[in-house]
Image (spheres, rainbow, N blue to C red):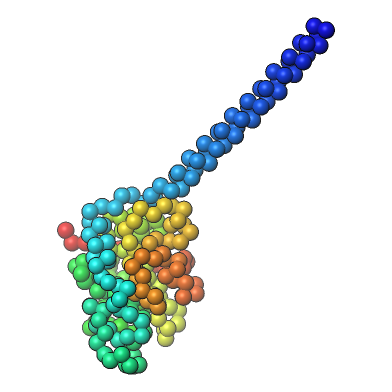
Length: 231
């Protein structure tokens, strides 16, 4: 009888130990998942500096959602229509490159723009120019990838993502990277937050969506460029 009780007690203790170990494992796994989730939500690319905030202010005041509109010929600096609404000649399509150049001008940064190049097919020309000797001498540098581009934007550099169309008769595209506290997970999934003029003007969008109309552009066909602001 005593031996039976001892065996029963040992089996009970063993089962309790197994249950405790299982519960401990579940708790540890849950904690690890929670830590991973929190880590994924952390900003990937450093704080938004005061200089970066100044860039955001310029972008947010641009009124890009109502200016540089598709199907209008516009003044590249202001985005205001400068021809009648029924104008259907050259230069009445999208204005991504004019908008980027205008924001650069407001921040004291030069990029290829009128009158040095017309607004027609300007984005592809800008992409080539950034990477040229002239572009580098003007202060532009390559960023290695989306994360590096976001880091530079958060530090207060003007950062663009640009795409040169492989067809010289079709437009490329260019957007401005918004300084932000984006997470690494979202950055990898969608690219940086951006502001653009285009088929759809966006004060806040993401790079993956912005380049969706250009097959082969995002993520492997684009380039990242940055320019320091004047102190």
